[in-house]
Image (cartoon, rainbow, N blue to C red):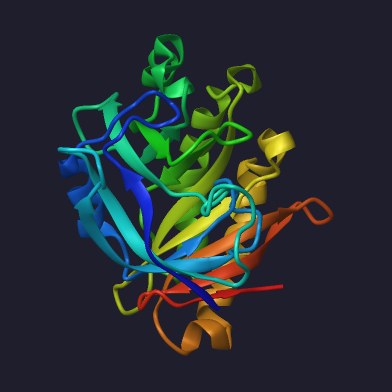
Length: 275
């Protein structure tokens, strides 16, 4: 692995989208970031990771009074090329905006730039007959495509009863929500589901859709088949038995209209890219 020490990740300087973040934003991220964070290319989770970041800290931006940056040590399988040392390497975080219910929401929808500034889209999402929260997905740079994601936050415990929870509580509402998301908005979506291990620990399942035809790969029946793959992996695979898993990434496979596991991330920050 190649190491880049104290690499700038994100800062309070104006970004390529014309937006700025505060030092408090950086502190907020620092509080929630895992000790080791996998690196993706261009925010595209369908690609293999290229390394990881650890040892995050906040430091002043050189030659810019009052500006701050989040830095980290990068460990890369290959050194990047081009004029910029971090060209193509993605970093992002989410920010809630609003929700359509005074109670507990069941899904979070995170929109990319510039769509999270679209009032018509926001108004349409607020009319969904499902308790949701809507937020911004801030990215380090400009992505080649607009991708957002949905998070199902109704936890279910990994075990035989997961099918009942999915069919009765998640599937019908996911179907309603997806019905309000239109291709004309110019956004492709991935789906995330939060689940609970038998020991009480939490796992995020990330279903990476076919972005050119996401409405097919996010059909509830496709997600259900992907859930079955994820549950089987987490309950029977040696990769899941060795230590606690915090994230499982799965990629859509058109040939069987389901998903396959592409990455396992553990609570200690280590991750394994699958074939």
